[in-house]
Amino acid sequence: MAIRCGNQAKHTETTYHENIAAVRACHRGETHPCNWLVSISAGWSSEIEDWVDARSVECGATSWELADGRGWTCAAGHEHIHAEVRDAERWDYADGPEEARRLAAVGVASVGMDGGPILV
Image 1 (cartoon, one colour):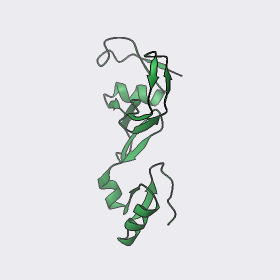
Image 2 (cartoon, rainbow, N blue to C red):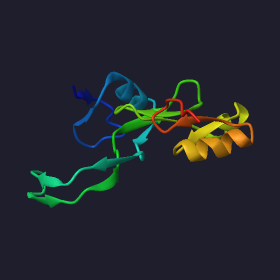
Image 3 (cartoon, rainbow, N blue to C red):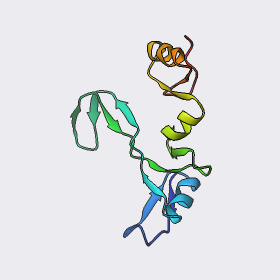
């Protein structure tokens, strides 16, 4: 459900955000497009009326800093914790079991890019 944003200081035309949290962050001046990479599959695009090859693109949804300052989140549900926080808490993102094993070898817990655990 799109919600109309009334932040005229930021938007010169009618703008809609994905949820209330995004609208609130926009009014605080704390939003930017999400740069989390997402995969799109090959297929027909009605937007450009042409075939589109599979590729990775930036999410683009409205994103903002988490209230606790640990990282950021976006209206599509992506979340990223800043490197300084991960370092202080002795954990990091891992791309799979092999990287998780390397992190474990130096005493760092691993978390998958989806936020879940990686079993090693």
